[in-house]
Length: 279
Image (tube, rainbow, N blue to C red; front, side, top):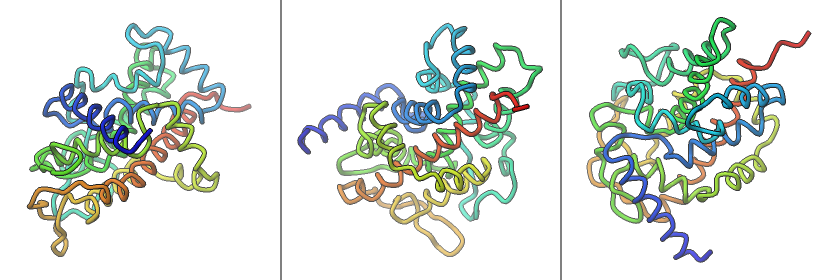
């Protein structure tokens, strides 16, 4: 594919995503969520995969877990739990929870991981929790889902250049397509080929709070263009963010890493919740 054809493909897919999602903040778009769950399904144990397949057989809408990871966005369900808002002078979460909010993506992961694992949960409850869990783990790894309320996670930050119209949409869709392309299976394969075993072990030795703090640190990086650091604070980005090829090249590597981290960590959560204990 030529560079021009690739750019046109990205532009068309981004416009379609924007038309579908309107002004709401969705993480990674459908492609990103499916890639995360595709990676997870390839890494889980055989027992976990069998249990996921059994639960999904009762689903009325989706035939596969990978597709079902988009469920929470269509239509938007549990809206307050897709993200985490932090103060502009925050250094990140210091404890598991949601800061000054009652619920957020961190608490959602904890809740649905417990429901997925609980012996007292019915199959219907486990199925819903499973679909939510796959989605939440993707959400928390999208950097602009751990950000600030006053600009709606970058939805009110306008951009110029090859993507648009706002910074959140750049990270949801345009950067994903730039980084890994639109083919979910091929993207998952390429990302898994880059994974080193010791890296995966390091990634799973962490908590949802750690994942949120990693995303928040990326949101505040100068290369993201989301804010201007002033001492301990993070002011608005001010001028429109210029998204050019250099921006895409720099942040595509970040997106690849975040998608892979999310898939590896989701697989570990699913194995912990669904694989029977060994005798």
